[in-house]
Length: 269
Image (cartoon, rainbow, N blue to C red; front, side, top):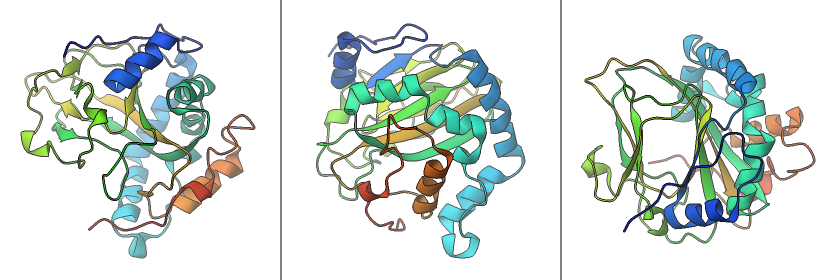
């Protein structure tokens, strides 16, 4: 199957029908230079703070052992620019075009990938306790604050694989190998965003032959309402509460941090 990568123009105010159809067909949409420079400039030092101060490590510990570590004192969306990025109006409008106007925030991650960070095996991120259907949309917004350069780890996606019903790890045995039909994204300008249907198989492919530079990366996910989504953070209620307290999403997206769209948290086995 020949797949054409659909790119949206920088700072495009709205998605057009071709971009929406491309996303439905392939499961991803590339938005080069999507984020405003001033927002990127404010998010990057927060990523440094998040990583260097140990805040990221604290949230990981709270997920792995919530009984010991409890609720983190600070979450990603508590950081001013991260919260703004999460609820960036052009981003939410794009998500609304792709999965419908009613959706809820699922989780957010922020990291600064070291140049020598190993790749991540093929996987998808669609949250479903038993992978059985794809009736409701879930999107991961992958924000590359410094873009992606040919001497950095790139993003490989497998177009159309979001239409499969498969476990997240169904292709993990392939590592980061090149797969027939894949699209490899390795050259994007700063402030670029890639929107993935969360069921799309993808991989971070490292380039150990290049020293590269750190990759500033933030991802946030959003789920179409109409079903109960399993949370991945044991402190998910506190996370949603903080989003409401900050007023993120304003009056245009009143369900962005609504709790009724989630089932109870279950610790992974």
